[in-house]
Amino acid sequence: MLTRLFSDPTLIPEGQKYAAWADDSESDEDKMREERNSESCEAADSQAEDSVSVAPDNEEVETGMEEEEQEEEEEVDEENGARPRKRGPKRRKMTKARVERFKLRRQKANTRERNRMHDLNSALDNLRKVVPCYSKTQKLSKIETLRLAKNYIWALSEILRSGKRPDLVFYVQTLCKGLSQPTTNLVAGCLQLNSRNFLTEQSQDTGRLHAPNSSFAMHPYSYQCARLPSPQCQPGPASTHPLRSHPYCSTYEHLYGNTSPEYTSSELEGPLSPSLCTNGAYPLKAESSPDQDKNYHYTMHYSAVAGSRSQGHGLLFNNPALRAGFHPDNLLPYDSHGHHDRTPVYEELNAFFHN
DNA sequence: TAGGCCATCTGGTCCT
DNA sequence: AGGACCAGATGGCCTA
Image (cartoon, rainbow, N blue to C red):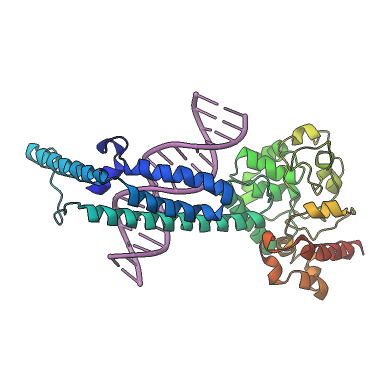
């Protein structure tokens, strides 16, 4: 009965709703979360406990009165035949002690649920870091992260199955399957692709893309992670967008040459994520400045997986020095590493592909 | 202002 | 009984 009272705000007098009480503590919690992150929950919990202890006695008394009124209403309904009486043990009257226990139990459950969701979000954050187009400044939504991860796994599986390097366009099409337009633009921006262009192709080649026996077309060094800054990705005062200022946007033109006027900056005005380094071990043809290295926040171990079976990239795993760079310890999320931990490996790869 | 996204609360269900 | 998990409800924030 009490649960019904709590779930149905109309049954509780204004100002005495348990939900309102919880919302008050929540609003305070939100503020504290913004200010102190992890400390906020503990503070909120303690505050919630305080709320229980300082709750006016008449609140619980009146809540109990509401319950009795509801029981009376049910009896009336039974007499009118409107609703059958519920079976089960007869509800015990909500005493003040029971209300207190209920609130305490509810608080503990809320705390557990909150922590559980935080853990889930942490796992999602880790997932964001290992899927293409990870950006600290523009996070993918939860649903888009899951979709992209699914597509990414599918794409890598297809690469492993076929043993061929995928065509860039098909690769991006696969990654963007089912993604929203903004996310599609983001992924496309990672590769400096005209998203509309490949979406059009996608609509024409859907069967080809996802046919059971489909295999990606081969293209040497396709979807490589070039570190040449594109005009849109030039760091410095001219570029104010946090993503656009990222110095490692790969360029489609760099990979394939300037193929079409369609690939203009106007087509890429959407927010740019850092480069799609699903195969960051690909040739790196531009020197980078220390400042650029500071901004480099991509993992590249997963790219090695993608190219592990293809000629040349499989060499990554044949090179002991490079293999050391892909030690499982290096598969930790980005935040688990300092930037300097990755730089030597990256440079090593750079030198490797320049030989 | 509508819609998307998110965090949180909440009650129900299942399991230990 | 208590915890984990889930889904619905709610309200806040942000953006087009």
